[in-house]
Picture 1 (cartoon, rainbow, N blue to C red):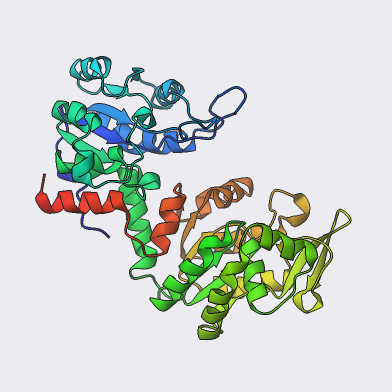
Picture 2: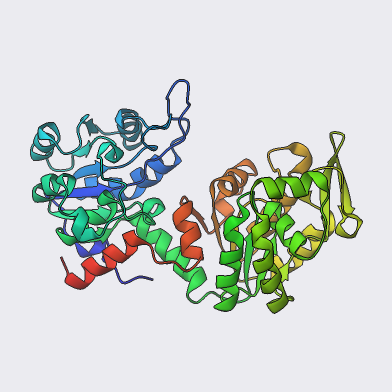
Length: 409
């Protein structure tokens, strides 16, 4: 666990707290309405609720989308949703660091909550810079003098060296919020000293990070096994010198994944007993599921799931595990014909006594689809930050909190 301060280390009653959260939510491109409020709810029910109940004057900073994208919208809806979740008033101003925002902060009363405008309206918010450089920008210079504390609860954005993530930490006493604290504790539990056997299950369509994660957790002796499925499983099969068939090989080439093969080959040679690839796969045969052993590849049809033999073999390893990390589904779980692999693996994890951590949008969606949310020890709402943490990379947002803790400011 990084050496950072938490909400337990500060007294917030009647104090102005600048709170950076991650409210970034899926937006309907036509109506520009928020489609689901998972992240808003997560922050609301933990850090924001606690600050309000302790009598803080809470000023919320958050981003939504990227400038120029359809989901780049103001935060008025986010404030309205937050008010409904908290069942208490939430103020919103369509200003970030100008006079309107500053006056709203000055007028806050004990326990009140204010949402400022989308931080990505600030021109240099997303510029990678040092905390000291960001502290010289108008965003920090205008808001910091009005505040007593900075609280970073946006673990999902902690891999970005952005102004609102790291800029306040050099000029204000800075701590982690409860989401940030939970994420770091849970990730540290599986990366620093996990109970063994420790199993990493890597799937999904985003295979470009799988090599680096596998290498890190095996080289550092964090994981005993890496189980692969989804597109990750396919590229690992190619590294075993298998031709998957034209539609599957073309998909991997189109998504520029073939460049991973040499590195995976080297890794599998080094850890041949620790890395597990599918023994059979399910293909779409004229609209129907057909399972074939990998020795019968290449196939003229697309691979959309792992097969029953693979599920059974993976289940044996999962049942013995004491720590499990899963990132990515085993196949096209949203299709009734190809949900079997993902559902079975998740159910096996749910039935173990192991500490289990799940992350990634599709993984969370699958867990919710199969009603297993309460059976997973910790579900991370982070995407890129989670991936980088699993690769052993230091996150700028966390480093900034560590440095602030050393300074005790």
